[in-house]
Image 1 (cartoon, rainbow, N blue to C red):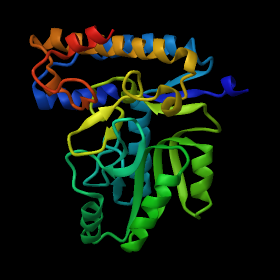
Image 2 (cartoon, rainbow, N blue to C red; image 1 turned 60 degrees about the horizontal axis):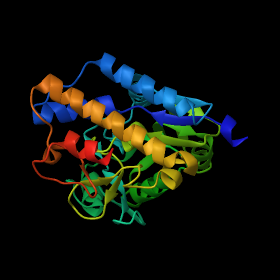
Image 3 (cartoon, helix red, strand yellow; image 1 turned 90 degrees about the vertical axis):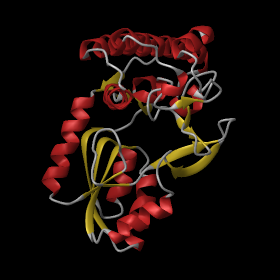
Length: 288
């Protein structure tokens, strides 16, 4: 039965917001606040999915760090959250303003993928471990490994925070080893927490262009049903719940910082919303 499979969300908003707060001179709420926010989120999601799991940031971060250290190989990271390395590939899923898939491109503020590959080629590395946060189908990693092989960089090992059997088996089929901090045989879906919190850094799919505009997995912005497997009968209420959680998060940042968070301050702008000096919490209030 579909509903007996786990629905998995990998926690990441604390780590992302922590970096954003330091960069923009805001004060983040305590870890306890994030624990409460996540408990509310988990309780809500458990009402939709009987087997809901939230994988903690610590489990993924420490697990990945251990796996990479044990490999003894230099790392090329596809993940900006849990495993930062000197060498990385900044790749994002692109969509147009209607949410139509536009393939892969470079993350906002980073060089085009061709230039990133050139930098890796010039590094002189010949053997690496590739690191990613989640391996679902394994298709993207296959493309990355192929790109690296063309510039004579071998990838005998892949490390991931969360691995789904479909992707693990696909990579094993290419005679490469894959190690994961946590694994699942089958899931309804596996989604990054940030994709449900509009305005958090890296939230949602990236709108085509170089303006760092995200399309969250929520109505009225993105497509919670097809992008995050949210049943259609829950999509509206789920989106409203997530936006309310997002407002709570930014209200708390404002309270601790003693100043408002403006739309222009966001780590990732939100499609269709202002990008100026409007207070973000006010914009969310109007939507709600």
